[in-house]
Length: 208
Ligand code: ADX
Image (tube, rainbow, N blue to C red):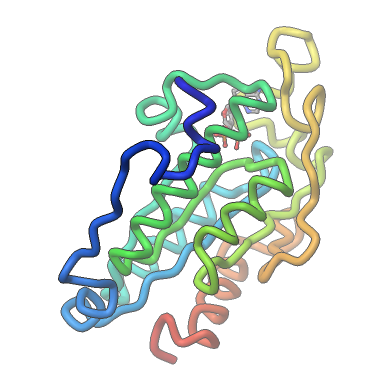
């Protein structure tokens, strides 16, 4: 990748932006919904994917168009070239933020489930997406996540078999002002899902 290109203005790269005749509002008129990004962030094993999946199912049953972008899935395709160094995680989140922006422009309720450990990258995603960005902090302690260890990765990380493991040998920066905090160690799945749905209702993304 030519990393310099990321910082060069499009006009200096002989690129011209094309305005499309059909805009976001036109698509919203057809689909009858406004897009949003639910950005789930938290440690591995905190419950991001479980909650995001359950929220998506409820939204689907309510007749809403959704899409779930999940770290483990996206990393096997779009981000298959990336590992877990700080730089690769930054690039992973940058790409996902751009995909999420496109999906919001298509007026999908987009659920993003990535550890996304760094404040700066989450802030960049918020800036890129604007007012339709909803940060959901899936707040389970390292102890809880490690006790659950659903994929056996904490055990491997403690044994030194996985480098740069979030919470063990790579940092997780706690969100400062998330719109929603879910305590998955204390609240059960239905309560967490209801909290997210209530928020979407309060912001009129879905009907009361
Ligand atoms: S992020 O930090 O770049 O946002 P992402 O959410 O895409 O991470 O991927 C995290 C998933 O990759 C974890 O759920 C886990 O299954 C797997 N994984 C493999 N190696 C690591 C690692 N070193 N640190 C964290 N997760 C890892």
